[in-house]
Image 1 (tube, helix red, strand yellow):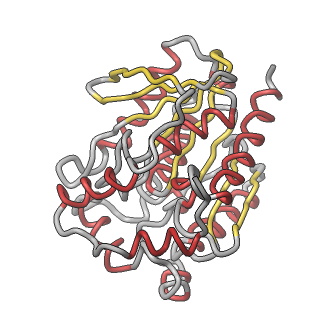
Image 2: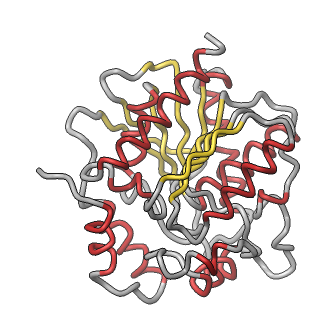
Length: 298
């Protein structure tokens, strides 16, 4: 089957208007994600973590002693194992690790700190399975990437062993929505616009919680002491500034950070890796980064 270009992906995304209501939106993201299922050589195994659905995936080349803990995007209000299966499974293949995708609780039914607490439960589940902290990478896209960063800071503050690295795709790090590219990239981003993001924030962040709180907006947190970060973001994203500001803050905190800005790419373009060459290339870059970090500790 022939590859698609990013303009073809844009056309697919714009073919239908954004659904109204959380059930319809959740169904839509699963419908989009299920178009390209996991590759036939990927083995899948269901798991349960403190009531959360989870799924292991393993490629033939995966090292069973290494794991990628993956948190899906969807603005904390949608997304699932199904919607992100192709991305999570291929990321595990690229990292040569087993991947564990989890379905943390979603807002508005389960606002903050539900997802934040579920991320910690997923991490502790992996550790209880016998994985060394330095043989685990943590990553995700969009809200899942923000959740990844919040988890790292929580583990550091709890003085728990940290993972080898973190992989952040199109991370949503600022729920105050103060990034300049929310305006400057508005006309080229086919997915995320300020009014919609504000709706997501209102669903996820309860009244009385400061949106600058690093647990919901990790951009404003203390990044010192975190493991190496890889940030991948498209140049045509309204959330571009969430990545560039994060990279600058991490660098200022003496954290090893790799920032890749992919020309013309849109939010979380890795999702379409089955037919999008740039999605596969981005996953290959991320996989090489994770493998190198694993290797640093044997």
